[in-house]
Image 1 (cartoon, one colour):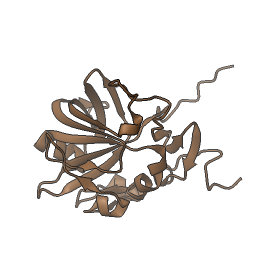
Image 2 (cartoon, rainbow, N blue to C red):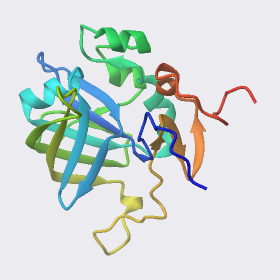
Image 3 (cartoon, rainbow, N blue to C red):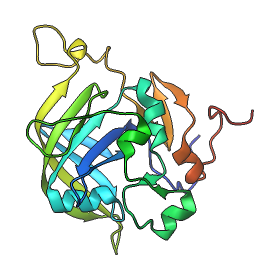
Image 4 (cartoon, helix red, strand yellow):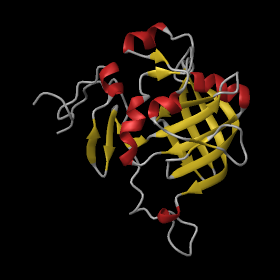
Length: 213
């Protein structure tokens, strides 16, 4: 039997992406997000308008989409509820966000120079996609509170062990992406780590790692 509970969140599961961009002073910003999908050589990214990544993408027109494996969940969660913006909006403060100028350091990740764009790659990520902005579209109602970014992948870097020998294809068995479902982290079909984001958004989940039984 189906019910119609009036869902407040439609967040059924997408890969986590660490988006690296450049701040106005040239420093690198790193933001975890999971509203992303791909078609051909393009990706569509959904980002809130108050995000530093949004401002950086609109100004610079470049980014790197770094895809972490599920084994990198600790690093990703360390920069949850942080923003590169010096001014933290009230709604983010209420969720527990704080300003963090050096997210690479906080996450314990290494910035690796890109080949075609200015923002750095994340050395530890098995998949790194250097991208250029194609178009930006207001998204999320009227007035809009988010932007849908269309970016084109200029170059894809993939950990050699994940490439099927003799082909240009990623091994879907070997690749275990970090997935976010309803603000919780999953890998290999399992809930792999408690989520600061889920706490900040006050998501009422059963069976969350670290939650009371």
